[in-house]
Amino acid sequence: MRRYTALAAALLALSAAAAPTALADSIVFERGGNVWVANPDGSGQRQLTTAGGYSRPSQADDGTIIAANGSVLHRLSRSGALRGTAGDDDYGGKIFTDTSPTGALASYGFFANGPILEGPYAAVSHTGRPTEKEEIDGPLKGYLNPTWLDSNRLLIFPQSLIVDVQIWPVPGDVQDWFADGDVDLGGGEVDRAMTKFAATADGGSSIRVYRLPAPPPALPEPRCQLTGPTGSFFRPTWSPDGSALAFQEDDGIHVARINLDTCEGSGPLVIPGGNHPDWGPAAAGPALAATAPRRIRLSALLTGGVRIRVACTCMARATLLTGGRAIGRSRRAVSGSAAMRVKPNRAGRARLRRGGRSVSVRVTGAGRRVTRKVMVLR
Image (cartoon, rainbow, N blue to C red):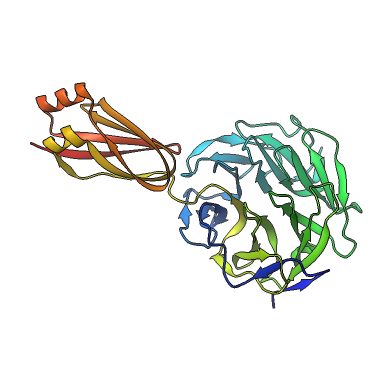
């Protein structure tokens, strides 16, 4: 049975009462070989890719997604569109990915089976283009699950050293962080405020939760331990505000709320069948959706324009067109859903009076474009 136990003075509580309710952020994950996104409570699940072959997705703060696809990394838009490739295609599939907060760099793990390289490695790539594994720094042999501590440093987890966790400035020399004498740590993440650290332990049989008295390299203090997973634990990832932790078990993705009380509680299943969660501040909502009336009277069009409703987290830009020519524009920052109105300019009103049985409204934002046709009633 899954449970939390106190390791020192009770500090953290992981309560099963509720998953996080804030929906401004999202969890990106893999299911059935495709990339998905959902709200932190599991609602609003949206499949981003359909071709299959995807695994190990992660996201930058702006919502850009990096996911493994065969021997390379794919850079995906929030709608799932392929925007380019990254990484190095040597040595087959990637076993882990993580994207830096700015989205400039991606880290990944891979297994090499020779003849020059052999064993597990951690490497770093530019996200905007393919990058040979030696170009930036490394690769580092004997490490798994490289996770970004900030936009310039990684946490890495050596397989065979006395130290459990090291810090890798990119580029730079690896620095020892700490070792937990009670367990072997395999992979984990520090929250954005650098006050908490969570890592899988002993092959995924538990998750160890620590308090950080100061940002690394200050030594963490062990506080709580989550045990009894369905199968094993993998990929603990913090909410942007550090109030909750998501992690993978064999039945899917669980989320546990965290507070500063006791260590009793558990993490409920919120995304059945999900794998490799990565929690980020970008919203899970549609990359871009727009609706417009099917028809409008000419008099209303001339005086008030076309009213549309746009759903995205983006700067939405609407263009009114007739005969393929732009006759009016408007824009609005949208977070969720909002109404917009695009009116014809003077030249546009003159063109509309001369004739034409329809107009179009083209909306762009979040890397997508949506066009809606509106019939004009005369």
